[in-house]
Length: 185
Image (cartoon, rainbow, N blue to C red; front, top):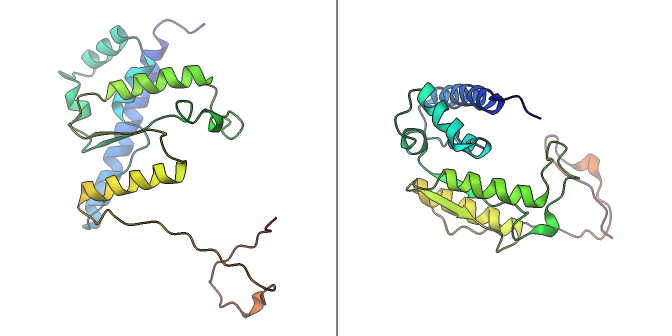
């Protein structure tokens, strides 16, 4: 079993690291002097999903956080929650393609709900469910991101592949042109 209070120590440490990374990347982007978007895979509120509410409250008090909205709205302009494949796309949820993933589908759904609920109250919380295939889900994310930052957002992503009648002479390709060879079954 876990040592009493361990989750608080872990989440406090994760929060320190995360704040350092987020603030550091923001400084770098501002120093560039060009418009930029900073995307984070996780946000500070996510830690609350991995702790008992009493432990979270103690951690917030220790860190002098008067209200969680400081962490939620104060740091993030928007929150995009991509629902786990374990909810709505179960056949794609697997432990085989991610060695650090250990959650059963049931636990993944539970943690997903708790993480999503941690962000409730953020005025730009966007939830992307599994009602479409993964490629379309990602397209929905890109379109919402573009809309949020004021870029055109009705762009369609198009993938083009060519079926060649014969194998090309690769030595004739200009240097620096990337290509990929694959077999079509």
